[in-house]
Structures are given as structure tokens and as C-alpha cells.
Length: 280
Image (cartoon, rainbow, N blue to C red; front, side, top):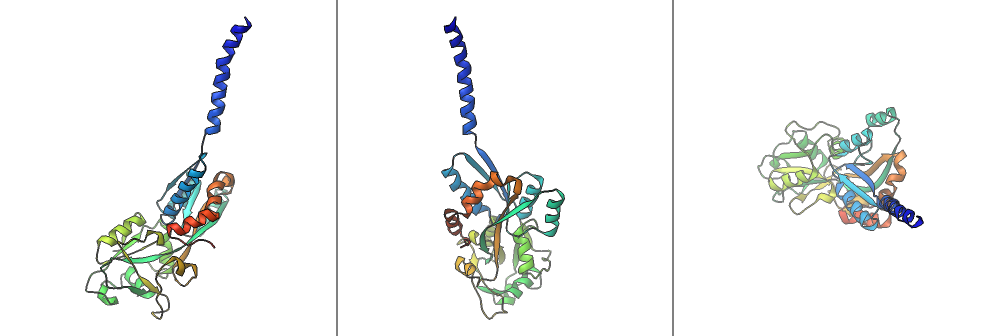
């Protein structure tokens, strides 16, 4: 009788053991969404972290800073990637929703103005860029180039890069109505690389041989500085900006692994590898 009871108990014990093992191997899932500028950096950080820690899974999606911040407000992402600070109205919405947001500076970026490689123009003043994007300058011959219509590309209004460029480069003036909005930074690079009269702006990590970076002057043409990690680091390049991870304070423990890794010595080396500027 005792032997029969023992046989009946063994399968139940095996089932409990399996259940316990399954719980131990269950992964912690972290979602990151937002800025296309931060996207390649966050993807690389997540990939390296997951190789080191098999208990964590991190999914990273772009779409723009505004998209990430909205997702954070709605609770559909754990971390918002941002290439700008919170707007006053965004901060107010979080306050009204009783959500306390932590902002973590993870790197710096040099925003690059790019043209087709065949374009003879190699430098522009801030004022010339402003006039191109507000529609006052329409032909490359007006800024020392050939007689060719300018085709200006921009990010969509949900992009933090769009906002930053408008405030810092266009002196908060409105974009011209014929400026072409693109859904992603990669699309700007592709379009500029295929259109001889094109101009666009992208994060430093998106620089490829298919486009040419312009040197920019913020002192009315006295000095022109080309975008680079070194020029952004020593602050000689004028269009440099911070990049952020943002998350709800109540989720601090959940996102700690990816935040700590990004800020670590190894994580900051990845910042440099991707093409951005480390914090130190």
C-alpha cells in the first residue's frame, strides 16, 4: 500500500519541480521606444546586454521622440528614447497622470547637415540653412553652388530632431510648406543620397558615404566646423545636443539593467562605436 502511494506522489512532485524551473527561466521583458536618433545606440546596447544576461529581453522600436513620450504616458513602453527634453505640455500631462518621470542623459550627438556627394557646396552658415528651410533660398547657386533647385528634407513633427532643428537652427521659424517630411532618419539619408539637389539633417551615427556632411558656421561665416565626435566633445561644433532615456520612477528596478549598462564604461564605449559622444 505504501509503495502504491509513493508511485502516485512522484508524478505530482515532478510536475511541481518543472513548474518551479519554468519560473526561474522566465525572462524580464523591457520595451524601449522613441527617437530614431537614439535608435541605433539603444539597439546596440540592448544586443550586448542580452548576450551577457540571458534573463533579460529588450525590444527597441523607433518612430520619433514624440511617439516614445506618448507611449510612456500611455504605459505602452518602459523607456522612451528622446533627442530633446520634455516640452512643458508633456511634463504637465505626466503630472496630471501622477507619473513621476526620470530623465537619464546617455550621450551627446552632433546634428549633421547633409547633401548629395555630387554637390559642390561644402559649407553653410546657420543663416543660410535657415533661409533654405524657411523657403527664402530655393537654388544652390544662391549659396555658391550650381544652378540647381534645392530639395529640402526634414523629419516629421513628432521627431525630437525636427523640434531641435527648428529651435536651434531655424531660430524657431516655421519650415517652408514644400519641405519634404520623412518618417525616419534612414529615409532622409536614402533620399538625400539619391537626389542631387537635396539637403537634410541627421544624427551623427547615420553618416554614410552615400551623403556628404557640411561644415557649419554660427558666427556669420568667420569659422566653419564640420560635425564629428571630437568637435562635439570639445563643443566647437555648434549643433550638438543631449540624448536621453526617460522612464517612470516606479519602474526603476525593471529598467535598471539597461540603464546601468548604458552608463557603464562598456556601454559608453558602445556610444563611441555607434558614432555618438560619450558622457566622459
